[in-house]
Length: 368
Image 1 (cartoon, helix red, strand yellow):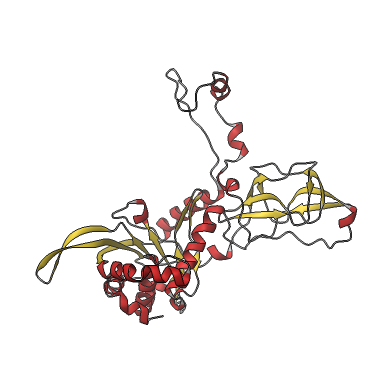
Image 2 (cartoon, rainbow, N blue to C red):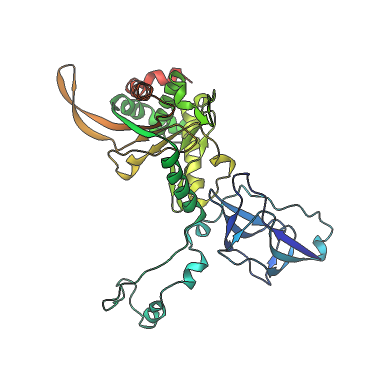
């Protein structure tokens, strides 16, 4: 009995994907629910499972081609032992895709490799030494991933639709550092996760958003939508590009829950294991360029959100305290906001509120 392998149904905002890689080849045996191919959308990598066990009889979509939901991409000759088993519709799997499925280029790129490539192999040039081109300057063309295309579209769109401004401030993280040093060992032993900076910043942002709810709102047509919940997007860099998974109801989360959630997002983002639901929505975002050494930057909005907080590198600098010059761990903060909705006064007050909470972090523990 022949059974069709179809592209699973995607979310309403995702209408197509790219067939990234086949894990099985025609003629190979597959088991029911075994992953036969990886599908890349503009948000995540999904797995296409086999609807029945048997032999992969035919592949109808090549790697690198665009496919749509419910499209037949392969045919399985189901074994007799599985013929009576109910055939369920393929669905996106929450399991993480193997890392190599994320970082390998699409096969199309190999077809477009420059003609000189085979000659270089024949010369057996040592891997540690680049091949001599005798004045030739080679180029490579690699298809943009769905994620990179989507990121590019959204960045251009937000520049055309929003009036983006950025305001800056600085924060003294001396007391945050003291709290982390004092409790980090006990925190990790009790909760199984390190006490980082992000939990302090998420909690401080949640407090500030309650004080200035317009930063948590969005524009919808000619209406302002005030959101009484706080879903914080955490920007995570991966080999495929930037993704922003969402901490739902972050204002109700403890420090441990925040740190566990972010650690889980970071691990699964690298392997392509985030679901579409985890990347959808969000009322406000936080991005940390400091992990790459950025001292100051202007983060760009993640539409339809109206604000994004940028963290930066912590750098010890001389500061005046009580008439004394002392060395303190300082960080520049940046808040980019949509000036169509948010006035400069509100933006400045929000950033000051975040600064105040971080400079007296013991108060944050009382907010949970």
